[in-house]
Image 1: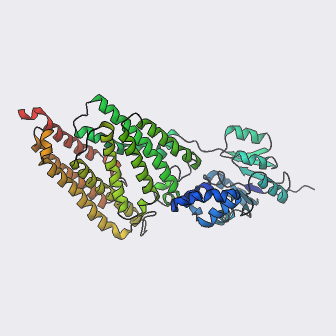
Image 2: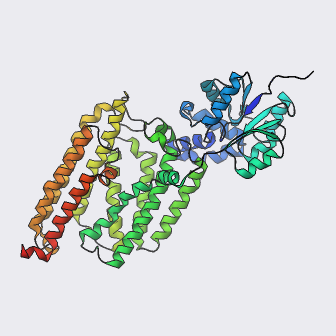
Image 3: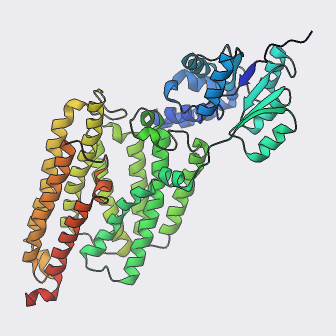
Length: 482
């Protein structure tokens, strides 16, 4: 007599049920908490992968409710459960995480996972499933080459997120019940992950060229363009690292949860090789430029790394660091061209970008307030700080206008401008722009990143064009005809 009961469906976790890897995520959380764990990890690994996973799981708490689940597979599993099929979570992930996920989903009748002694992957997983259900007594959903050993003893296969060659290989050893393909990763998704739109911030490297009236010097223009590209690649490397270290915080954020790594649109394994690849390209480009550009680029990377790991969690230190990073971009323009930077330019930059960094934090806190949260995830600010941050930011912005006014009345101006008095027209324009930024921020209408906002806002473009016109008139010999 045949048994008409449906065979149990055993489901892999990493890369199958979830669009991420729990081991990599937990290691990143541990290293973010304290980078010195990096020296302990190899010692744990020497005792075996099971011990390695167990030690990490004992120290790292993951919010499994916000993980990027494979929704098509999840819908299929719910349908199978409704039909009375027994579902088993069979994963090489640590038992602690597997139990938390199973509890959250409420789908699985049994859990098979790694513990402190056994790493349940490959042949170990196969042998355990055969022991429980017999050869060809179960169906299996997996995604990787290591799952081939399990599929070889399964009755049917559900192939998830696998390449076409792997899917064909599986079809040769088991009946394929269903194929759930990996979502295509578009070029746009990669560009979003690299935050290429944020490269506009690196346009600050052109500021020394503009301030020195050397914008039409082809050699210096080429050097600055190379510096722009090097900083863009370096910044993208940092952005990817930052996103990998901030996965949990990003998933809890109303808009950052859509970032490619947080949403599981790009495997985090790809992010791990993108980081060194982009950084290497950046420094290779820097080799074509003066030595001090490489030094500035290295300082920028280290400061940004410190910001990602720790400084952004410290109240006020974070915004001062951001202002310093913007100013460092201007310094890179000077390093790439050999143009010396004036005290006035550095002072104006520091106050202006401190104001914009404070506006960025203000906008983030406003979102928290609107969502009923008292603090920003991964930051040291509370919604009670909104008024104080606004005061700091407005004052800092107005100080940048004061620096500009003092510069106009300085002896340095006479060497560059034939009619420096016309520069006074730039002061009310700067005051208007700063005031407008903060007015929009207070109304909740400001993009989270005011620098990107400024480079996409038509009114800001108009103000910048008028300021450029004032500078051109002040420096042009044509002003003598007016």
